[in-house]
Length: 129
Image 1 (cartoon, rainbow, N blue to C red):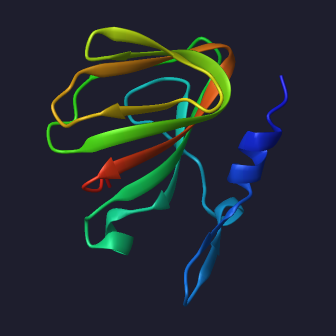
Image 2: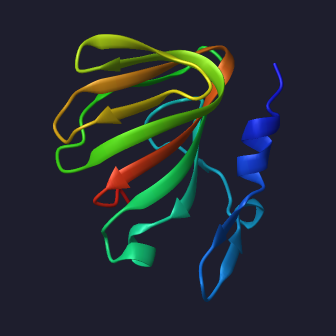
């Protein structure tokens, strides 16, 4: 599988009227709970006064972000590479390039990567961190 689209995001830019930030300069962080999951915090709470946050998410092949709930955040996923399945409010949704899914606050969900891994752009309203 080609991860060219993911690499374009991984090496992308946040461009604002007053500044540009290179994603390549932002380190990957291991998820504190889920093995095989890494996050790149592109826009954080401190950048938006807590209104929203944007994160690149890299899930290793056959690994999972297990069932969990964000009590106060609406979360969106945009699949940019790989494949997998999201269980969103009890419904299995196939994740493939171009899929967008929305999890309102308080809705249980999990994300399971396929054999090629899974690469997401996750957004939280209000900010996750």
